[in-house]
Amino acid sequence: MKKITFSKEEKAAMVARLQRYFAEELDQTLGTLPTEFLLDFFTAEIGPYYYNQGLRDAHAALMSKMEDFGEAIYLLEKEPAKS
Image (cartoon, rainbow, N blue to C red; front, side):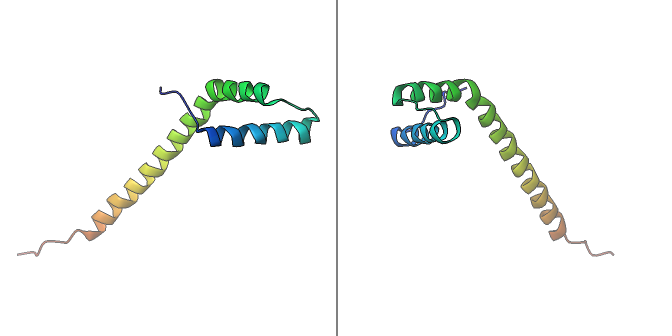
């Protein structure tokens, strides 16, 4: 599996959100470097579970649409004239 990566801007936004969460919910202040390490851990160790679930959800959505498509094609079929 390809490594999950984020742009600098995305990573900075996630670090800020983690820091805010720790400050507001846990009354703890985390510096930028420890928060980046925590984010890297979540990305490497937990991220694949979310990624794989996203793939399963996308596959299910695609299969549902394919069934709808197949039904739409069936409804377009014409009965041949009887001789």
